[in-house]
Image 1 (spheres, rainbow, N blue to C red):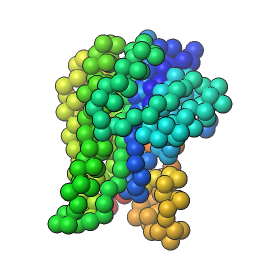
Image 2: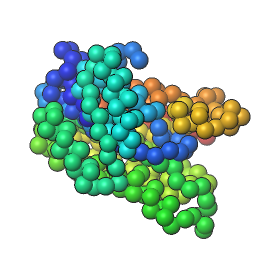
Image 3: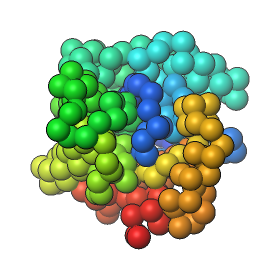
Length: 287
């Protein structure tokens, strides 16, 4: 998704962010009222990938409520346009675009679109993710491994590859990569997903080291199990209760809780935060 700040006080009128993503799974880290997030300075634009539902939708709505012009990107164009319609109905500004995040040329086109529509890219959220097969390492399907890595890891790299030069042209910015609690711990029968999310953390830290002095901040967010439509529509209540019990807080999280952290990291209030990994997991990883 791309977004350009439009609020008189909340955001700058020339701000854009990018976010992407795709796929369906129930692994953690996948997947209102006016926000108090403030984006200051000139020429700030946002783009988000995979904002057609769940976590992505919540972030898109919060950015738009903060005054951003949002470009919502999703593999499913109808899903992207649905979120765009919600933003427009609430008085915000948004456009939707369909794209495959595992295609580097598609990512290049999306960044170019954001720049042409908003005048410069300053903010981005890379939210791509699929779950993949559930098999132990010794039996993991090779095609399933490739697909998960292509979307969950390569897709984030392609985003960074084209977002960073665009932000350099615009004078700086901030990026959030959506990782997972499984970026720091293991999870049986999910080797591709776990490997990809660990890789996202490595990408985030390395890119932050390379570009922080050039005015580009890059961080990662690690959600636990989050209450998205994908989760609630595909799991029985017994399984949902079991997932809630894995978190010491006694429940699963909400997309809005992930969005609040993400939008804070994008804002200038987080100006000294870069190269770090921020959990929103109800103490899942504290066990």
